[in-house]
Length: 122
Image (cartoon, rainbow, N blue to C red):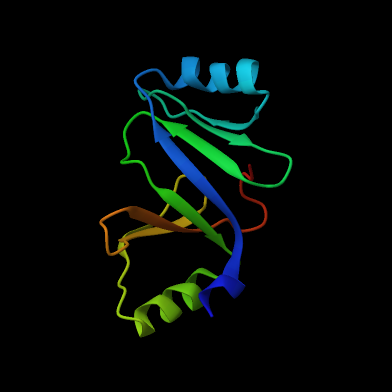
């Protein structure tokens, strides 16, 4: 069963001003910023972390999605493939995370994500 690979789930939000929106979630809702990813020439991406392990990703460019953080990318991808689901845009991020995307039957974007030890964690 695919759920055996899940470590946590995060939801992403697209923002016109990621910094202001992350600050709002922190100041108004008390959700702490766990990681701020900065790339030269691009607005930052924020990962806010709740005490129960859930995450909210705030970014300027990517389509909103639900992130499925797994313990073994290849095994999770293999299991999805056995169910007729093929990942797209598989890559390793500049932070060392391995990601790939797929859609549910309604067209919602899902991101399979693996965060190796020693890479930035939220």
